[in-house]
Length: 154
Image (cartoon, rainbow, N blue to C red; front, side, top):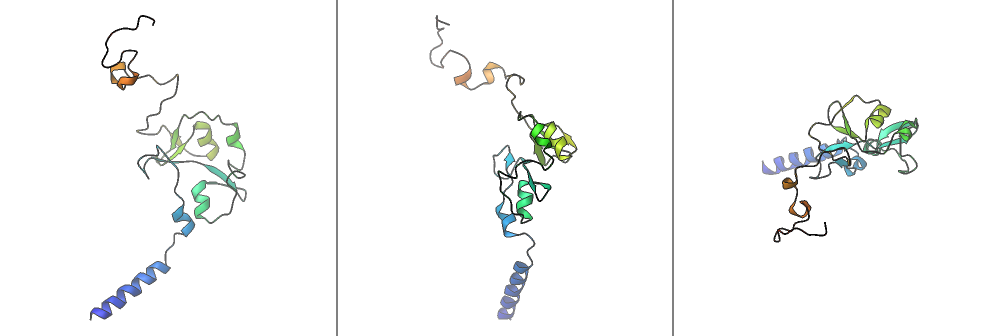
């Protein structure tokens, strides 16, 4: 009885292993994400690549088994993304899974987009700073933690 169950278990395992629908190249490709920590959390970054006259996100092209040169194929096939600035003002697709660098890139991808929910980004010159007492001690001004005297040269 035990040997029959063992044989059955091994047979089912082998059958399942041979029916796997995920190509090995796909299982090895990990979508870059933002924010990057902790692993496998955050939004999938949209990294367009033109392969065989069609635009794919990087890992999607890898999962389909397409052969391409990463640098030569970077960007969308129409060249639309070349007109976009490189300023990081992120937006997300409507189901909040893919992050685009900015609205222009989302429009080039033909995506319905919205502000990313729960994403805090700091844009220099645009984002308000937190009150000084909430900053780390090393950034709270010219006073050191132990010495509360003012520097007269300032």
